Amino acid sequence: KEYLPLFKEPYGLGTTIWSPLNSGILTGKYNKGIPEGSRLAHKNYSEMLKKNLNNVPKAVELEPIAKDLGVSLAAMAIAWCAKNKNVSTVILGASNPEQLRQNLEGLQAIPKLTPDVMERIEKVLANKPEKDQTFGRPSRD
Image 1 (cartoon, one colour):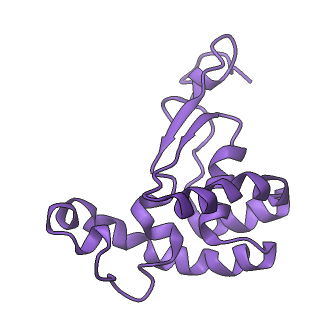
Image 2 (image 1 turned 135 degrees about the horizontal axis):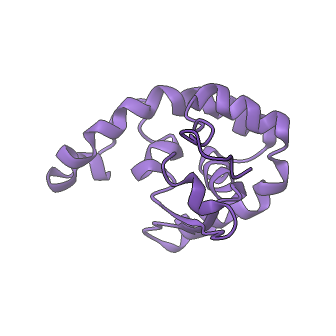
């Protein structure tokens, strides 16, 4: 929320989203545990990424929304990032051509993220930044 003023005029900056799939959490592959061969199963990554497992319950809650849209959870997650007017770049972390193809499906999902759908997603995520704090200064709105 401290960066919100930078997204407004006169600056109009955008943010770069790194790991829009939360290291694979938003693909659904960790919903039933840690699959062999995954990043979280790898010794060098597991300690760094274990905190991401806290997001699995939210990923499970988001799956029905993606299903209602007819897209994968991963595509919906990437579309959600790209739809944000304050985002200029979404960095994809595909490990192979198939993952890249799946990630690019997120572009086709953007129009499906209507205000009602975005509200459903926000109810699950509950992470929308608070309104810009003005601390007595005039609002930038």
